[in-house]
Length: 140
Length: 389
Ligand code: SF4
Ligand code: SF4
Ligand code: FES
View (cartoon, helix red, strand yellow):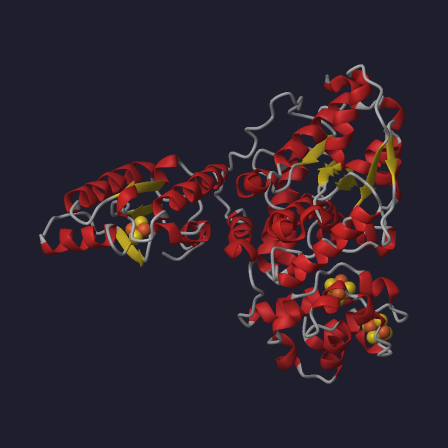
């Protein structure tokens, strides 16, 4: 059987982390192809439902990433995102998912290598954990 | 079920077009686009398409105020439930409150391999592995982080429910992987997922060997009592905690907290909000009132609309929560204030959430006119119990 390849959904803010992923690409930094990036305008717009829907649709892990606190183009996006993240972490824990399946990062536009590293680390952890228990019955 | 079956089942064609339903409907009072009578008329004129795609289909609170008065006993809430399932099979849905987070959590609980961690709040509670009595926790562990901002703690109600059962000498069993009862999915038209949840729960309950299931949530109670038997086999009896407690009043030894603390308490006036599921759906009006009256130092005063005339808290099944919902809440809170009560007692976690939300939302505008303490009946009883020191 082929090795399990986890699926990661990454919600990345347009101004920082999405740019970082872009630069990772143009600078030909290698990182695993397990991630599907969803561009959002700001990490502050990410709602718990985005994350839950990702798990409903078969994601094995979810990353929410955006600017560092002082860099947000809409002032307090990262703070909003952190507050949201505290709540969704609790819900996801109650659903029985391992903490490693949900990750929050702040990655600036210039930090392409960090972006690549975060994805590598997540893929490694998720491979150990195996498919999400919420995934069964979903075509992936 | 097609539209004709629905019409037959809910006796829609006995409708006299008297309009009593629309006259009493709390939604119609604030939203002139919604009329249960017109909805039924549309069904009878056989315009299924129009009915299914009507944006107001998801506005009904399924509160039973209309059918309670209907001279022809048309079952409008069930009509709504069934038409919504037709609509949902065609991709229609209501406007989700909280972006649909709660409904998504409910759907996720129907996944077969899920292993929840839902019982990490049991401090001070005695439960047992094997008991004839099972306590159904419901969605409280999921509600908790969502509503902490408006200071509602459904988990606290669950904890106090178990403590009260303990005081009666009952150490209930809990299901570590209990699923959502499916109430909200059934009433938003997602019957398939509802059935899955019902089957999982029925299996786990059968395995547990429980004879009685105690609920502190009226929706779970209604679902187990009325809806589950239509889909799954349950060999145990659902009871609402207020019924159980009202039968065991003498064993509870209730005293007002202030008295225990040594001061002489003034009589505190309270009023009670009947949850639609407990009241008009199941006819349980007296047990909660008996409990409240049994607490010394507390005087129950009724709102202008109470008992079977009680008014819904304004949103159901996390759907179509709108300015109209807020108006219903403000009106209800004003009724509660007008009684002179300091405290509104609720018996459904959602009523409490909805009223508190309205106070936070409209507090600045309406101020003291709508501000009052809201507390779940279970917490009130737990506070008055001597063993709670
Ligand atoms: S109250 Fe009953 S009979 Fe009258 S219009 Fe409504 S559904 Fe028809
Ligand atoms: S169930 Fe309640 S909200 Fe729905 S139509 Fe009847 S009175 Fe109105
Ligand atoms: S713009 Fe990047 S987090 Fe707000």
